Length: 203
Image 1 (spheres, rainbow, N blue to C red):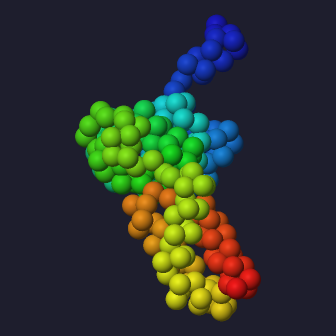
Image 2: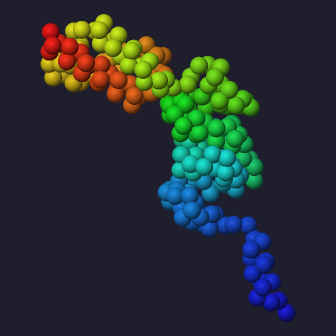
Image 3: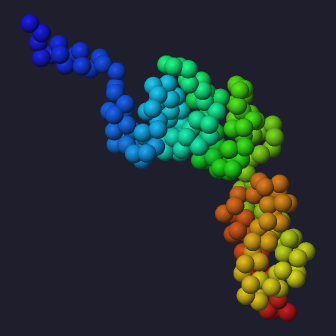
């Protein structure tokens, strides 16, 4: 006669069903129902996702990246599923974005270059000089120079046309090859323009 303990042990050895996995992703990882449903559609996809989360954490960000980028290039062959990059590469890309080394837009661009290779994302960032510029003093100096060179637009800003800030942000991004950290770029430009207004008032 089979005991209750034997039945429980046998049940514990059974693979986790997709519905159980989806519920776990929602409860333990904070995934939305729709995202969790996609990630459990194939056992290999679920394993790929879990490995990337094990390496990087940030389950929601990892899941979003896999769904928006990786799945477009993945191929299914019955019980097998081939991915354009490894779970380790996904994890490293997500961490680079999360720690502010690169922007989300740069992360997507890097993914395109990593497909079909075993290169480390961090190595590619270093080789191409893609790291986001987050040195406040350096960006503030560049912002002050831009404001000084574009007096007409600075005067418009001082006159109440705050939308001109977008012009300066675009110029700063151009000057830094898109590497200026966006939030910091806005902050230093606002400061440089305020300084310009103060000096104009003193004059």
